[in-house]
Length: 595
Ligand code: AMP
Image (cartoon, rainbow, N blue to C red):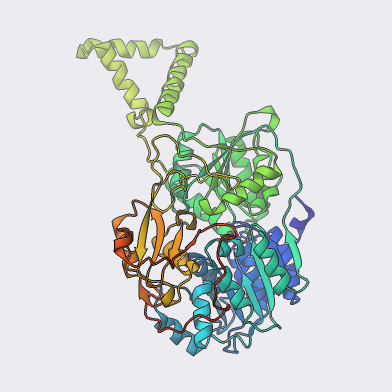
């Protein structure tokens, strides 16, 4: 671990009210991006952070943003732009949590697809922080319902993702309509040319933060990762503990609360488990470690700080329940196993949003991690039967069984049973059938879009999940939506609306052809009926999409005025320049569910 670990949140100059909330969350030490971003942002500087989900980037910009505002003044002092409504909601919730002890703080999330009314009323009442998607934020700015005269901090979160979602022009428009005096924090996992242009044009001498951890070699421990959705993590972990062979296990989580909670859950399920974290007295920690050493405990749920340097040769399994915010911590975590020349296994649970962090870990450790395969019911059953047989072998070899032999003879003499049946009954007393013949568990793996930005092929027989289809293997079809150039629509509005409302990744949104009164969009051929019906009602530029399968030229006027836009996830270089000057969208009357 680097020397950074010695710094605590107390050293970052954050106000007490914010520190209190952070400590309550159980964060032990600031993550690298937090250490690097919080002090300059507190000093009012712009920052450019190359960081991905899972690094603690939300707190990195939220804590200083909160520290710099005055909640008692009812003006918008911080604006966060996020690519999707989910992220906007998530960030707004995080800011509310970090600011829970700031008296009077008001945070509002604003995104397309939601009714305008409540957003308008909340804005009228006065809010301090607005978090939203670019399209809707721009609408409010144009209508004058969102005023940014008092803005102190502007954050662009996941800027590259906003670009991919087609928000390029909206973001630029917003950047051009905020006061010059504000500070800007731009966070992006990658730095494509458009982001670099934004930085050059709108950021002032930014502090550049790139978390490039030192290269480390990892001990010879069998390492793998399991891609699971966030809400399947606990299930996946439970099955993993049931099926993977281990002597003692250590499982890493991010916070003290999570450690306590998970240890409680495991105990309730019959595991000998305890937590190990910085809030525990040294005595309690020692007791837990001793219990793990002597076999009274099998599983410890730990935070990074508490488990540093832990040396228990029995530990044969490390589970990274939460992917570490600092990739270097990964190296230290897996170093808890494979000690004293023994074999070790390390399994990393990764949620789809955290996949980039997995790549960073692979880069830092100069290796590819295998995909974890949960042992099948048969494998587990065979292993347990073999273990039972070897237990019986040992008993036959070591023990003087004459007393038991006498009992067996007596039993058979009195009952006249078959010896095979008697042996079976005795085995059933010793072992439960369901342990020796476990049931198959459902496939909990999230579909793997692949690493390094490339997509893997689906495993044979695997059906890609809804909304996560692969560009190459998904049959596409042309759909007609009833919003066109005359309504002021831009490809980005359609991508944003469809991606958000259908839960479809933007890369599954193909060519977009704008006509005057309608547009054509390429989408997966088998959009499920419920999503399709929902999309019919979604409004873009005030007009319901009323989506239908494209029936060809008879379906509408295509008098050669259509333009084709490729929903390119990178730069839209093929995109024609719009004739209308930037920021000159036609006025329209937005209605509920307007994008
Ligand atoms: P983010 O990268 O912002 O999406 O954060 C990923 C996760 O890390 C969130 O669940 C945060 O609550 C958590 N987190 C952020 N900072 C810390 C920290 N310093 N220590 C432990 N967990 C953290």
